[in-house]
Image 1 (cartoon, one colour):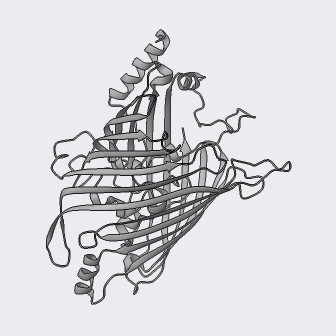
Image 2 (tube, one colour):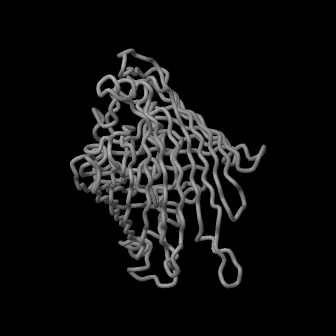
Image 3 (cartoon, one colour):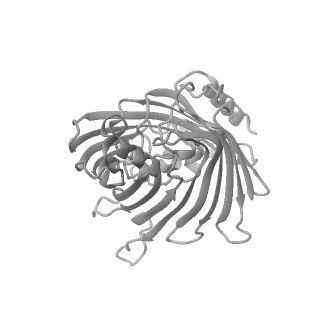
Length: 435
């Protein structure tokens, strides 16, 4: 390893172990794709607001050490519905670093660390009593270590093992539509996926993931499995991501996924079938009080680019076009607040002439309440619960590669699955700054 690289690596390690606020915002922001205009390398055209740190950031990236620092803020207000109306602002500041040892030291390894500071009230979680989270970054006020893991590849990357503090949801059932859709079900992962209490971002937990490349059978085919500690409350007592004292008191989550990623095509797509299971956690039927041991969630997900426009010469404009998302999942209704969900979304990049990097998003979510939750509600209120439907539409305006402004509107029908409740309309504005 060159001496210069060794010194940089040592300095980076010092940053990671010192108690400086190295923080990384909420959902997996590897999905926030920066837009770069290479023709005019000025303040308004550079990838990050703070630039290349006088070229040092670029030199480190060329040697395999990259940094991502961003702040995402969601202002939201429920402007219609029978509930008392509120306006909230929730933000997440996140910083992460990734070391590619293929570039840095010529061996097949990767190290990743991230942490977050999240702040503000959660509109849907605190005030609306609905099945979905209207913000994909909403959570609890916290300053915490999110992920901290090392991944080693073997046999020319045919086998990869990831070990450390991981966010299992990111790898087993999450979507990649965080860059455009506000609602958590579409922008990150459906709520029913959390039934088995597998760790999520920003509340990573100890675990291991093993991925096998099956491309010798079919190019693009893979299989993946993982085991993680579960939780009761992901933020308590582990308020900062360093308290592992009770991580093994609530069972272990096992995850399995079989997936296929289309290879060498102008219209890429990915398709996944998976299951998450927790055999030891205890769940209580809210209607009868009966306790159950164990839970599972099964899911199927498809994401596909289906259209690219052509330019005046007939050449495909691959940075523009339409992407589609569809996911269905479910679990036992006798112990879970949600027993079935279907989510679908569409994302179009470059729809408006002259705004090639802007995006339009549209999504629909249907969430079916668990049978036991519906029975308990009927006992208390004289009527059961059905399903909730949410429709979302938004637009992301990218005036610079490092700043996005995103207005959003969501229509929540039969809130919480209660058909007697009136339509809720939530309007929001998201800002993203990439430092």
